[in-house]
Length: 408
Image (cartoon, rainbow, N blue to C red; front, side, top):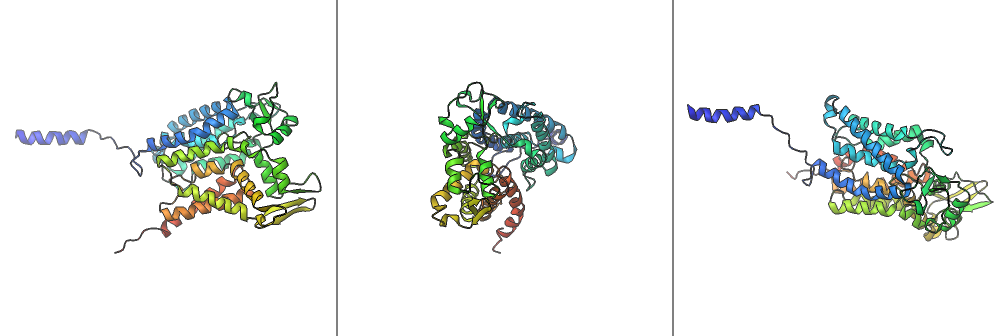
């Protein structure tokens, strides 16, 4: 009798005692928290670069967005079964991604430069992001990236207010105020001709107000630009109207908080590759596909008063373009826009990329080709993100096509 009781009581105690659910584990043995903490460390490189060139407002905007997103996650966790799928690490990582896509001047009140109070925009974006996380599912449950949808909705509503125009001077890195920008006339001319590192300091201002390189590129490649003289060639654009390429490498250009410094984005992507959380096939094939598109797709070789003169495979025109200018244009395209941010930190997301390795080759090429075309003719600021959102919709089809079938 005593033996029966001794064996029955522990069983009853085990049934009565609630069991803790094991932590969710992803492929490779890493749980969700460690997985997203690795991504956050990789994004730290472009985040620090953005704070250097856009100042304390960039840091303040990140802190406010994270605080709002964390509070919203705790609220939306209480709503239905979808709320229980929300993961705090995933929410923090998604908020950091959204911050990287937004310009630092949004954390600003009305000034002579900006007629409106812009600070509600990042706060509303953080709340909208949590709603998208709730609607589109928790970690790894959907093929539509909630950050992409949130950003495109913000662009659709506030597009004219999202255009960046300033970068801090060298003597005011991080400590300067991006809202205290010099007029665009003399400093902008010197900046375009001499570059960021050789531009002299302008007293009385923390930042320089210049037209972003991406705006100059898009107006030319889309054929919308009209020449100030009788004609404008690609060589004239690259020589006279674009900043030195090294300025885009270090991130000394007006732009989103985390998408301007090419070297920081590449280092962050290599860190993720080293930690084994992304597949090298997606970024490598995406970059190759983008360069193929930029070299092969038609671009204006000359813009006259009557309109642009378009040409496919423009590198074959040795007079107006040539291989060297075509490659230089492609280098400006990949560094002036958010292409590197999209390739390393979005296209490699487990929810978007296909499961099969061979499918990832096709996926990467399609992302690069489509994003490059959208960037040439539609928009440099949001074209790559829209292209990835469209291509990611065919990921289930790629998974079915490349699914491994049993031999017997």
